[in-house]
Length: 441
Ligand code: SAJ
Image (cartoon, rainbow, N blue to C red; front, side, top):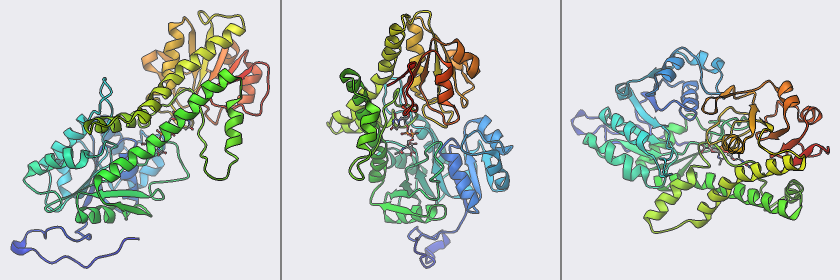
């Protein structure tokens, strides 16, 4: 737990004392970007008794939050209702002037040429700088490459004429929001902080100590930035390994699921990852490119990391090849065949379709003349593909092939197998079931 330090001495001339102590006067907490990272954080601070200024450039989000309506699947309206007094959604950055700390949770996507796109971050930094007050702490939570906080954010904030680490404080603290996860929360997930100096780290430690059971202080923002990338790239590399293994097992005629189940019986030294139709979401497919970008600046080529990205990118095509072969074995070409995809979101239990492999599979099957539909209890429509989620029973009956792309827990897969002509399971959710019309990845 955090140590409480004695109150600071007064600096000469009545100005707020230069920042050397953690327990600065308590003002509001500012959150910039109230999306899937910012909103859970705002809720955590409000539940801890803080007044939270929630800034976003999306009028719809600000209006929804002002009306107590959530737009994040993991945060039901009932959670927001008791916090209405404490959450202050606004489009106005000027309201951050009353905050003791400002936490930045804006998107850090990729450009079309798969380079880091810091536009949202740099834009937010400009607006924060224009309203920056002495004594404030600014924390960046958006996932990014090491050096962003010190090399990109600080110079913009210092346009205020103040000095980072002296007149105001800056730290990086990676978000660890895992959509759909319930066993860990913002409070119970250890929070890493790295300050531009020791005083900034102390401030950030004190801030998160109000909402997190454990705060882990690292020596620099760069270490914190890279730790986040490592966490996610560790997953993308291991997912690539088992995806590649699934392609090899297909060649060798070995059941990849049996292999992984067997390996996972080892009580030490092995961590289970599962092959599938590919890797989606807004983090794992993106983060390796942030690392590679920074590495190239240092004339370093992280081939391992980039290779994992390439392997995961090939998995949707491998799944389409499996559909082609399964239909062919049933004497049907893809052209004109009705293919129903079960699950469109990028992973089970959520409705997020960003970078979902299902989108690529729909496009590739359509290119081959397939008539593709989907059913997903979490995704009502795929507007870009002009598709709406089909009613399950009639869709199962009418399909030549049903492919399980995302295995939502609320679907009865035994019933799917009983009522479909042919089922191809890309997620291994039918393990333990043997049926003539069932094929697994
Ligand atoms: N996937 C597999 N096989 C596996 C595990 C995942 O194919 O064994 C696929 C999933 O189906 C999905 C993709 O990978 O398409 C990513 O899913 P995920 O659950 O691994 O990751 P995210 O993107 O939903 O969330 C990750 C989490 N990172 C870690 O657990 C280290 C989350 O905690 C982060 O906060 C989040 O990234 C983020 O925002 O960075």
